[in-house]
Image (tube, rainbow, N blue to C red; front, side, top):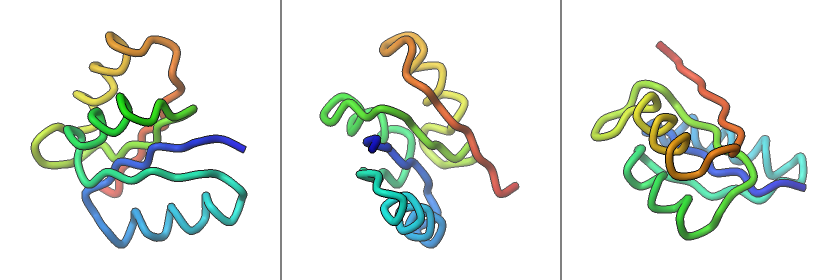
Length: 82
């Protein structure tokens, strides 16, 4: 299946999403904020990024903008609990 980078500052949401994705056969890397997510992306090169929008330090909008410049073509799914 796919390697997914899951970026969310809410640990409970990350754990739940990771469990769901892993049960579907995906490999999941986690990051607790956008800055950590971008660093992880550079190290692991996931197939898709699932990012929260509202986060401290670097929010989902900034993550998406950076990915569009640095890694064109990577699919991004944005989520928000707000």
